[in-house]
Length: 368
Image 1 (spheres, rainbow, N blue to C red):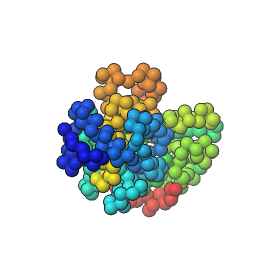
Image 2 (cartoon, rainbow, N blue to C red; image 1 turned 120 degrees about the vertical axis):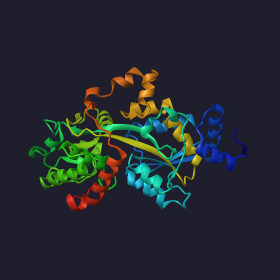
Image 3 (tube, one colour; image 1 turned 45 degrees about the vertical axis):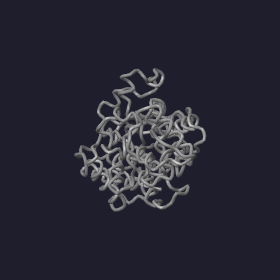
Image 4 (spheres, helix red, strand yellow; image 1 turned 30 degrees about the horizontal axis):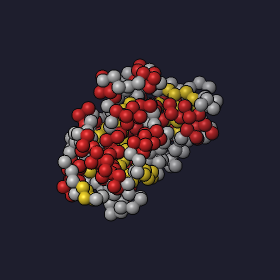
């Protein structure tokens, strides 16, 4: 199907790879050859303790030896990832990302700005239509819900809902896991706080969320530090608002020192879908496509599930009996997710614009 001359992939083959679903072992073999000829993949914003990415990255390298992975800025936010593509349009060097993993609302805007390369993986049909761009510019990869990760050495009675975080006993305790002006995780946390107070989805919840954090900051409960498992363990941020999979992974990493509670709040349970995309200016486009094939294979999807993320193909994997029982047993009880809401793209977009533009003026806490 595809022709190679030495290490150079023909232009016609490259065009086919860009638009065609891999549908045979032979075509996948050709993609592997082309990716190995490039020899490198550049990722960005993939912390090894996020969603099991450490093991996923090692799995890819083991399966495709000869392709090195250049990992840029593991702690970057979704906005930083998109900006990295924009800033390196004409740069084929090591600072130019091949692939990004960003919050749902960042996919359509990056496509609109001409920053993404369409590509449909071989498992395309098992990705829900609601979680993918029809042209293949971006596609959902996994989701989780926002939760409270709590240092039990310092917090004796864990908060059970957003309103609890405003209690006096939580002074200098509550942090976000990102900058709400650029991080999807932090933006969704502000949005969830707004929903918990009864605000309507979209812009109204974004505005209410800002008012919530204004009060939290004025009360002295908000810590303007980008929280991580390390800052939680050290006592700098005893309560961290983060995705459930990050909280559960952090709990496992700390191994009881200190003991950690992971609480899904009673209200304002927001499920966040992240999406994958390939840069339109990727220096290693075939390695990028092979990375996507791996991530959306059964192996890659279960790798995310082992990191406590619900992969986008979860229902398909479950229906076909592909999920190991021991992996399912480690997930939180289903009832914790019963009231979870999945914001639409329109709702996310309006909330994101409201939160990112008005955080400084309303809350006034420079998170860093």
